[in-house]
Length: 132
Length: 130
Image 1 (cartoon, rainbow over the protein chains, first blue to last red):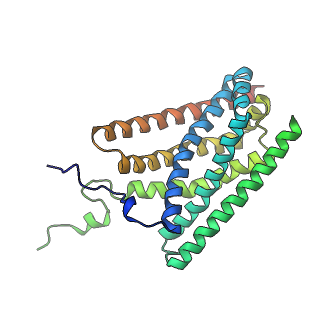
Image 2: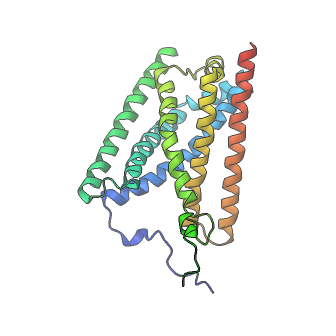
Image 3: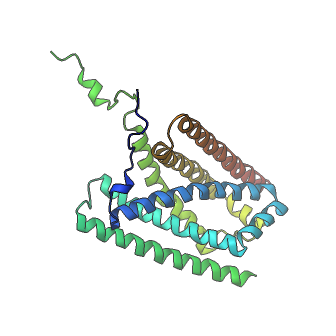
């Protein structure tokens, strides 16, 4: 019979923190966040289908300080998961496995994702400010 | 004497009969999502998609090319999301709850996909008529 007390993967507790495992966990966390984001995207489509009142209610929530904070979070999750996903696809074709390279590309991913997040948020926020 | 035909290895199917299908589809959808999500992000940031009012949002969705890309985005994004969630659940949820969660998450993604694609199609048809 199966022993249910045996340790199961992922064995997170046996690793010391490094760039590679930290970013790997962040990839999973942002992926999970984007799963909820994908459902929010569907809610956006449904509210557009629902008409004026429905859509206004949705946008009022999204444009509140809390909604904007959530949107900002999704923006970073999206850019990070995208950039790190490309890094993962590189590994899948056998590129960038060298330890020093993996650390460098990891740092590059964080910098690129952060920069894209700030630029996008700035552009969208200033256009929202202009509209209201 | 070997009883195993080389074809068995060539097909890449293990005892699970699905081989690397999950892994491969996760990569394929990932590659497809690069241009699709970048297009949508560009539409949002550039102001091409003005989400502030229902009229402008529906006008964007109803454009034939936009509607087709949005359907592709909805399908691919939710497919990729389901595959990713499956891996997370298989890692952290155990016992009978695992099967229930896996089925529930799969159903939720299919429902979301149908709801999203249905909305895009109806908005498009309404947009073409007006």
